[in-house]
Image 1: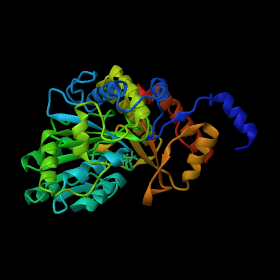
Image 2: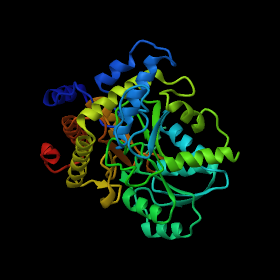
Image 3: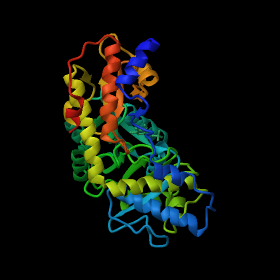
Image 4: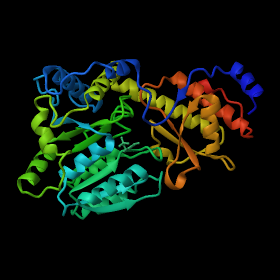
Length: 406
Ligand SMILES: Cc1ncc(COP(=O)(O)O)c(C=O)c1O
């Protein structure tokens, strides 16, 4: 677009505020940014143990677990249920690796159904530590629950692992149905909840999930580089038993036995990610003040609006209709349009969405509806996306964007 047109457009739309609509890392709010810049403290003193207690308590809320007091020395990592939370220095992948490396022996067999990149990553990670039956579905297609049931009936699986919300394709698995099947077949159930925890209903206790993983930079709007797991007593017992039998997979930094030794004392085995822990604790306070339910509903309102708007505009969505995610929406580019659109959206409309991965690169874009993003930012971002598509020569029907987000 030439500069004259850009100037006219800028008068029509106020482009001074950026719209950051990606499925993580998401924008951090001011309380989180302020906490991140707290002056240094020692890793072992009471100050940091206060930080950990506060973080543990915020995490229990985000994981939808029973509450705990955000106070040092009162077992803030546990509550009136069967779960403990453990903070991991590293991104979500590190936390997932901690779960897998510690929970399985090299001769265990696990079942991993997948329909996108992050599920496939779970399967790949498992392959490093145990045996895997990988049920690979097309990206964006729902799992065949009948096939999962047939597999579980074989009675040979130690565990079933899923990526709960598949960020690469915008599909959310039917976790309740899978959990019920796992319970019936006495198979442990483990979830990568990296883009579901804090953004949509997650019920570790009802689902009897042995482990759920979250990454800070997604639905909880914390900083990148810190993550956490929620694990139940079956999981913990199994980890100890495997270790006592001398049967565990090699690992050191991500040793859960070491983390469990320190957790009850609001400590970590190695130098913790001190400032990230402070930042995340503040972001989790924001979530707690909003309440899980209100945040889940806001994410759902935004995703619903995006889905209906783009469908009415004539676009196609990748994910199966019944299981579309409320934290990320994957929209296929129409014929003749590719990531050049996304580049212009960023450069000229001060608006960011994300592209696709692997074989879908250049064929679709993804809009994140998670974290603290206000609905007004999503409305504004969608208006800019429509204007940018128009500039790429598309003739789109006239729509009242606001009406989709009521
Ligand atoms: C569902 C899911 N799992 C795992 C990951 C990897 O997490 P991280 O990049 O924090 O290691 C991501 C990142 O986008 C994700 O969305």
